[in-house]
Image 1: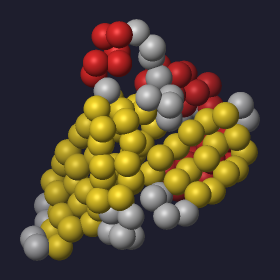
Image 2: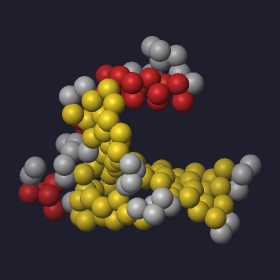
Image 3: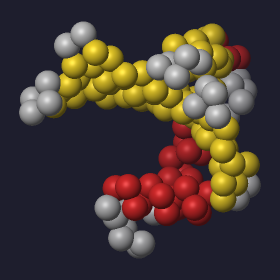
Length: 127
């Protein structure tokens, strides 16, 4: 890691609805917000890159006084992927995670995002 990259890293603590605090050292890589007029919900997503070359995906959704805060730390080691939500950790084959993502998104087997595209994005986030 270069000195310039190291300087952009900071200590981050995300307080989650499951009672956990997800602590890591990292930097913001990307973020997006949108408002769902039908449900009256504002959603804010953030993607962080950690100093351990993992990704943290944070989702905060609010409707009036109600708020939902979730975050997932994702690490890829070879052909396996570990997902941690601050309380529970699950390790699975990367292909199984991609199958779940495609299923949840309603995508066909060969539809984008391809495994290669996701792997390339994860590598780029670690630069």
